[in-house]
Length: 146
Image (cartoon, rainbow, N blue to C red; front, top):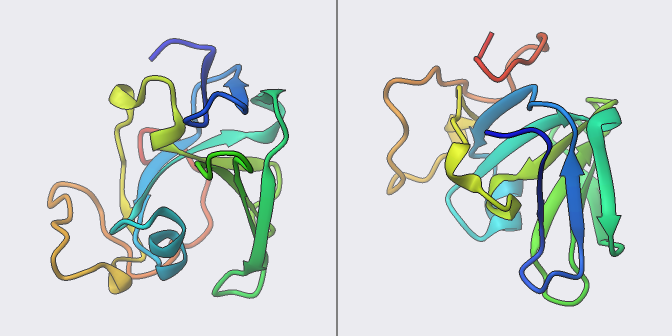
């Protein structure tokens, strides 16, 4: 992975860049992420808000409460519908990027599986990663899982 790294939507209307390595990478299996991605889980790359820059375009936002009642705001391209990133009111100062929106998602390496209680039975979980039934207890997130 090279820093800075970037991403954007399928049509190119929205572009973003991150000036530092991710704090955390993992797979979220909650129903909200399943519905937002249309897939079994969301591969997520968490970055510091201060390292994130929107380079072009303005996303539309969809908001609803998380399972803990905090505002979950998901950004997507108004032209092509690509899901891009989200903010969670419970985790101020960070932004979660959809790994599929990265220009080069090949460097994505999840460090854990979360919300596995909601995982679909047809989805194979990474056996070598830690599994959390829901959101793990708050800890300092790092991309190496520590």
